[in-house]
Amino acid sequence: NAGVMQNPRHLVRRRGQEARLRCSPMKGHSHVYWYRQLPEEGLKFMVYLQKENIIDESGMPKERFSAEFPKEGPSILRIQQVVRGDSAAYFCASSHGDRGWPQHFGDGTRLSIL
Amino acid sequence: AQKVTQAQTEISVVEKEDVTLDCVYETRDTTYYLFWYKQPPSGELVFLIRRNSFDEQNEISGRYSWNFQKSTSSFNFTITASQVVDSAVYFCALSEARGDMRFGAGTRLTVKP
Image 1 (tube, chains in turn cyan, green):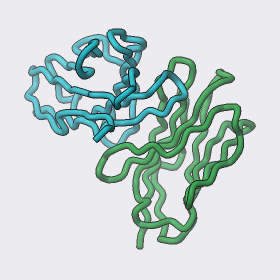
Image 2: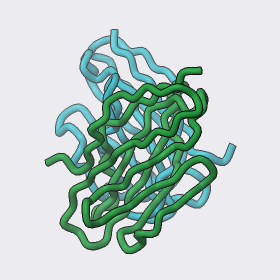
Image 3: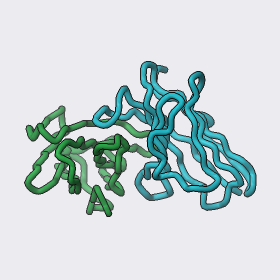
Image 4: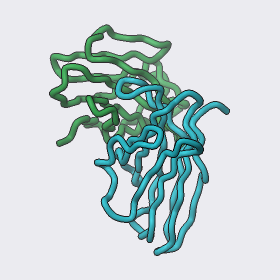
């Protein structure tokens, strides 16, 4: 499967734990975006990264959330000290270039906080 | 400010009916891109179409067609002869200078047999 790969597909955490969501972009794509989708809502932009750089993190909460896209390996979205309100589907998308290029989405990670 | 408005929260039609999903956007950029994505019940997001702001030609792909009108800032999506498999949530999205996409709230389409 040459598409965007996200894992895990489902993640359950207790309040206060850390959640790590992984995203491997499509082959040849160097632009990665993370979005959050709350139940019955649309997708909300969180962060835009290129290799080793955060380009735009204006949609990311200032505390507990961080993202990286290292030179080697997948992009990671990390949520520390999770709370119930973090329960959502987190989608990663990748594109060949910046704006205007279609973003291809992974299947998402469904995060549930107990 | 809301960038992309999909006023129809839910639409229900009977198979073989035509249905139009509305999308109105807001931007000050002269160069921008518009997208439609489909999210079936399985949850993944499927890219349907991209349009740049300089191309107002309507597009048809099988039973799908899109009507882009800059004068009304609209990018509407029509499904002709709808089928049960078209049941999904459809999102319209706008990409401006920064590159990230702003999504509308989505329209849930239910096609009944």
